[in-house]
Length: 171
Image (cartoon, rainbow, N blue to C red; front, side):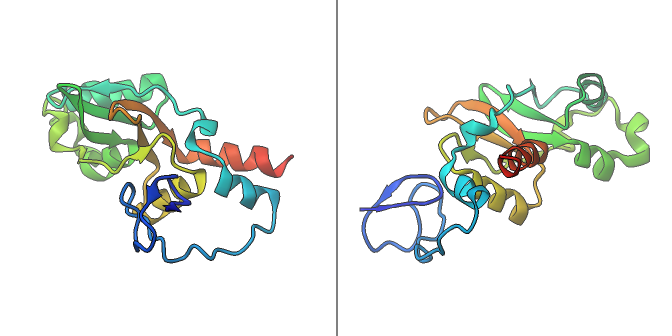
């Protein structure tokens, strides 16, 4: 069995990508970490980031209500959940790029028209390095975290990653 270095899933020997997270297993000859920070990134799981409890709304929630929620709570994203299933995410970036100066005129429209549908998620047991890589490649500032049960477990942000790195580099 080959253990995926990103999510810890046990894969059949010789497969090219992880059956759980689709991460390539062809680079298992990674260099030895040069610093304690690099070691932490490769060893630590997302749980060390203490994912925040997700703030959720339904897909028919008016845009205005969601934007007010972001501002009043000082948060960067809201997860869109219908019938217990994650269907989207709406972030500050979505507000700027999709609403922009038309926010008032669009305020009564449902958030489903402006959310990012089917957002990429990470497993709660994924490694921090995998989260950083996924966020970087996807250009994400917020990523929903899913428990093994498939239930929405939390959300992490770039700010969480930066705090983690700062803490690790300061010893």
